[in-house]
Length: 202
Image 1 (cartoon, rainbow, N blue to C red):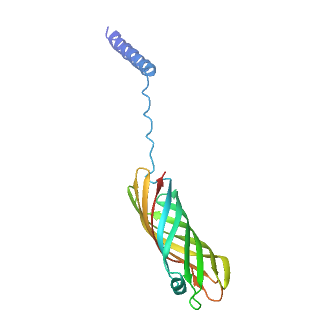
Image 2 (spheres, rainbow, N blue to C red):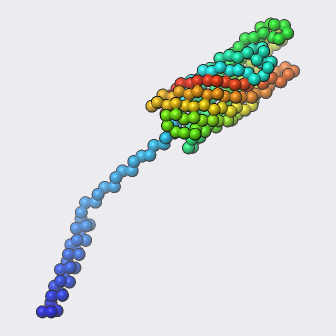
């Protein structure tokens, strides 16, 4: 009798263990919760239409043509983190007078910038700064003749982008320097551009 009791207890425990293991195998497994997609706080792209005021830094340019409006557009593409590639094109056209003869002269400049822009913050307000290269296609017509050339230089900028849903508003100041030599003297086609923009955020 003393031998049978431990044997019966052992048999009951083994049977319970086997039944528990089978029940665990046949029980429906809880489905894993789907991973929540983590969205980037940075927009993938921004498209802007720009309007600004251009003030040339070169004294000859400023004397002959003065300041004037500049129109353009910008495509800003997300690269990584707060870094973006900014591709911008513009149009500046102004009529002035030659310094000696006072004859009319017309200058048309098409500035094109490729900048690396870094946004310091993500969210509804995104301040930024950037730097890169710039190219200018320019023409000048007057009694002396016609010049139709290209110039290359650099540009730096700083500004802030405000976003509300898919709508973006931007304010920027940009400084550029493009040295060209249309005739005998070097001329800098760059200067300060203060601009505002509105567009769509993707």
